[in-house]
Length: 526
Image (cartoon, rainbow, N blue to C red; front, top):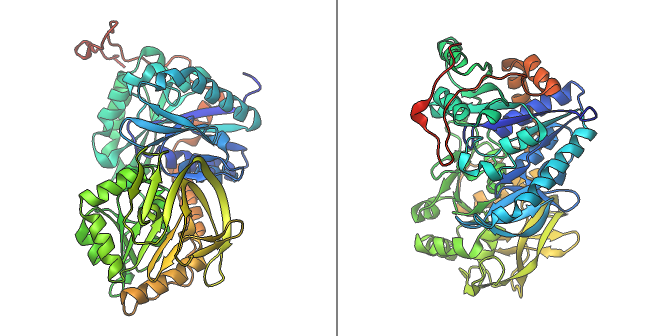
């Protein structure tokens, strides 16, 4: 192990605790100090993904973390990606490439193969970099999954990683979560829990301090930092928990914007939404209000409707129809209301969808907004793309899909440098398979000006200087600043260098072969 660089696992008491941003902040803080650092998430379950330069696919959060390190996205940073297509089955992406579909029970047969892949990949990263900051998945205390775990304590045990446990105090119950998450683990796993981080704290830290001291007394572990809540940390969400119906996307409204003409954007919250982050580029724009919706009234009332991608096109199309959203969209299209449809959302607007691959349903009727058909192919399209917008703007994006356009009789929206005409355009209705298209600044500004005119929003003006990539970089630097200021980085660096504590306290409880007896808990006196 002497030839391996230092490493740390950032785990969570729950999903959406802030692990991804804490990892990004640590990566950026170390990179700014000249450390050769890389991110790693052994297994990710997310439909928000990006395409790497070599044509692989990884979770979007790992691409952000790579950027924080000054690196290009790589499949090395997320060797196993699970993309849920239903409540029981997920599409498996292994080292960036499709590897089949798996159910909860089938997953057991993949265990050895996946464990070998992730441990091997982590070892190679540790040989190539000074430090690797690993991110766990969900909660580290999912004890029903522990035997097959390769992302949390299973990885920490295999690689002897110290674990920093993060909790979101904005949800409430964080102190109990830190204690309970630690206590429910086996003694061997508890020994790797090296410290705690409180995330998204609002208020006076001195009021919290007595609670942290009590947690230290009963667990034997320090809280190594209390990270304050930051309104401007909202880009590149990893999972659907960050896109609930009714939530406004983006930073809080600037009081200086009061009285300004605004463009209202309704983003449809599909059940199996993928790459929900496409709408974030619109939310970066002053005067543009983006909200997640799931009702026909919101679709009718908005100035612009966005139908995002989905991991289950045919299933989510059925959901649209059941909720009356299908009729709302066709009525909106008929009266000339602007719509932007991306990837799976674009496919739903076709006349027909022939899908023997994703849903196995064969030929079904689409919403018929576009005069084109979609046919699903066994081979998955995975590529970064460049092209030209209708105004001559240089554009870039990426594609992740099985469905392909056949027999289109529509005008095309953009031009792909390699594939030629791309997408469809019928008046104010626009569709494309490209993700990331709206993050192209000049293209987005021209598009929003067109949409405002089409929707009759009088007085709306597009800001001339919004740059999505600059906002993304500022977000990463903000997290690095918060980590540097509010975490005990010296203690974190000691963990990275030295590994797990030699003798971490264990919260004792009795086990039998079948279950844990929570009523037999005994606490250490210190």
